[in-house]
Image 1 (cartoon, each protein chain N blue to C red):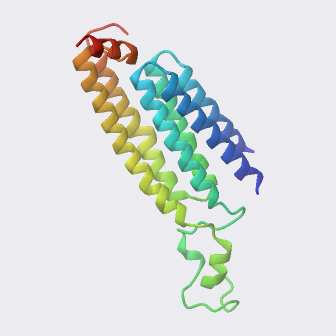
Image 2 (cartoon, rainbow over the protein chains, first blue to last red; image 1 turned 120 degrees about the vertical axis):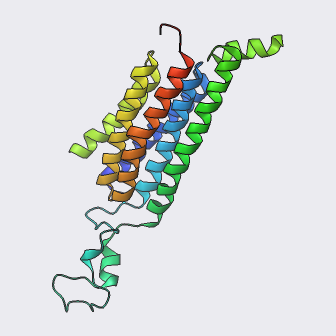
Image 3 (cartoon, one colour; image 1 turned 60 degrees about the vertical axis):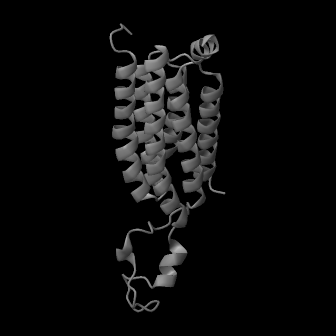
Amino acid sequence: MEPFQTGAFLTAGVLIVTGFWAIIMMDNLLKKVIGANLVGDGVNLVLIGIGYRPGGLVPEVTHHFHASAVPSTFSHFLAFNEFAELASYPLPFALVLTNIVIGASTLSVMLALSVVLYHKYQTLSVQKIFEAMEED
Amino acid sequence: MFDYILLFVVALAAIMAIVQENLYKSIVILGFESFSLAAIYHFLLATDVAATQAILGSALIPGLFIVALYKTTKGRDE
């Protein structure tokens, strides 16, 4: 495994552990939402790090290869199989691109529910919200 | 070398965003963390993911947090 890939996995581990610690231990609701965002970032970083190939080509940049080129006929174009051997793995990119957008929308729903809880109980502390719920 | 520094910056900014008491500062640090993560995606050869993460993570998500924090601290000094 490449050193930069290992560093990316370690950073993703730090992000996930920090996010879960914030979700479990923090008292403020907005800090819990920040922790959920950090967990999502860590999972995305793991998935991107899987597809990394050191020194590889970017698979979205398609001017490296020509579809009708056979190997070693065009000097500046690559055939598709040569390009596929050199490029990084593009499947996790499509998944993570979806995951970022869905993460933003679920984050907005979490923030809206936090605002609703604040308007009902006049506080963002989870401890005080539970105490007020037991009084009802 | 710069990419390893970015990995360290992301890990440090995540911990700082959680430990920080002031929520406005915490949100700004979260946006900085997302932008550094977009640069890491660029170094990991995922340029389309980097563009989406840079737009959503450093502009849209801190904006939503600022709006929610403004609506939950309105009328009080904090």
